[in-house]
Length: 527
Image 1 (cartoon, rainbow, N blue to C red):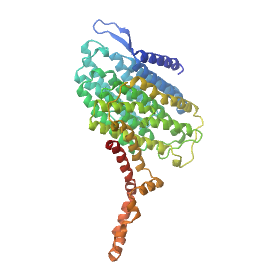
Image 2 (cartoon, rainbow, N blue to C red):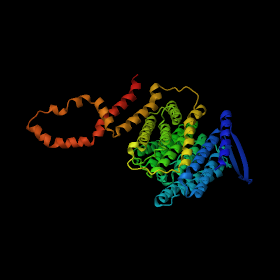
Image 3 (tube, rainbow, N blue to C red):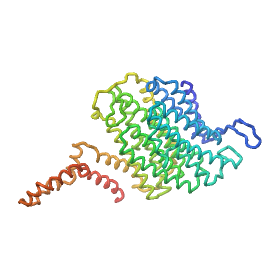
Image 4 (cartoon, rainbow, N blue to C red):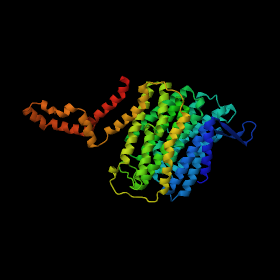
C-alpha cells in the first residue's frame, strides 16, 4: 500500500508535464519476436492516460485505507483481489497493444466477479453470476472484433485506422456491456451486493468506465452509424436509470443508478465527438462518486441499514460526513461552482452549439432534472436527523474510514476547477441566453419535483395558501343552495368524493409548484 504513494506522485508529475506540453510518448518492449506478427508491449503516455491512472491509484489507495475498518476480518484476501483489479485496470489504460487490452479487459471481468461474491451468500452469488455472464458476453464480442482487426498486420491500436463499420459496432457493444449501457443494464444494480469499498472503486472509476475509456481510445475511428446507435443507447440508459433511481429505496442502489446515468452521459458526449469533455466528466465523476460511496458506507457500517428511510448517523461524526456527502451531492447535481458543474455545463454548452437537436436536448434536460431530484432526496431523507427511529449502533473504530473520506473531500472540491483550465475549449459559446440558463433551470425544476413529494405540512400549507387563493377563501360548497337535495348529497357521494380527494391531496396541493417551475422555465424565452 505504501508503494502506491511514490507511484502516485510520479504519475501526477508526469500528468502535469504532459498537460503543459501537450505531448504524447510511446514506449515499446518486445515480448515475442515473430517475423510475421511480433507481440510487443506498447505503452502510451499522455495527459489523458496519466490523469486517469493517477485518479485510479488515488481512489484505490483511499479505498484500501478505508477497508481496514470496513473489512477487518478478511483483509488479506480483499487486498489481493483489489490489487489484481487495479493492475488489470491500469493495464487497460496504459496499453496500446490489442493483446494486452484484452488481457486487462478479461482481468477486470474475472476480479470483479470475485469481488462481488466476496460475502459468499445467496444474494452475492446471484449478483456475481449476473455480472460475470454479462461481462462474458462483452468479452466474446470484443475478441471477435479484435480478431477482425488482425488483417492490418499489427497489434498496435493507433495503427488500426481503417476499421470497418462491423468491427466498430462490435467494439461499441463490448463497451456497452462493461459500462452497463442499454440493454446490458441489469448487472450494475445487482452488483451492489458487494462490499461498499468494492462499490466505491468498481462503480466509480474502474469497471463501469472501462467501456467509456475504450470508446475514447477509438474515438477517431467511430463510424457515423455507430455514433447514432451509441447515442440512442446512452439516451435510453440515462433516462431509464434516472427514473429508476427516483423510486429506489436502497441507498447503494440509488447511487449505483446515478452512476449508470452519468456513464450514459459520458457515452452521449463521446457520440457527439466531445472527447476531452467526456474525459473531464469521467475524472470528476470518479472522484465525487467514490466519495459518496465512502460516506454512505460509513453510515451503513454505523447504522446497519441500507434503506434510506431508516438509515442513521452517529452524532460524533455527522458534521464531517454530512458536509462531505452534501458536497459530493452538489457535484452530482451540477450546482454552480461545484466539481460536477464545470463538466456538465461545458458539455451542455457544446451540445447546444454542435447539435441543436430539440429531442436530444429534451432527453438530456429530463435526465439532468431527474438527477437533481433524486440526488436531493438522498441528502434530505437519508441524512435527516428527523428520520432516526431507533438508537444508533456506534462503531468507534472508524478512524481509517474518516481519514480516507476527509482526504478525498478537498481533492473532490478542487479537481473540477483545475481541470476546467485544460479540458474546456477556450472559445466563446455561440448560444442564446435561454440555452445558457437551461442547466440552472433544470436544477430548479428538479428541486421543485422533489418538493412536490415532500410530506411537510408547513411547506404544503404555504404553497397552497399562495396559490388557489380564491378557491381557499370562498368555499365552493357555498354555491350549493341549502335544502333536501343538499342534505342528500352531503350524506352520500359528496362524502366519498372528499375522501378520494383527501388521498390525492399532495397532487392538488403541490400542483402550483409545477406552475412555478414552468413559469421559471418560460420566463427567459419571453424576454
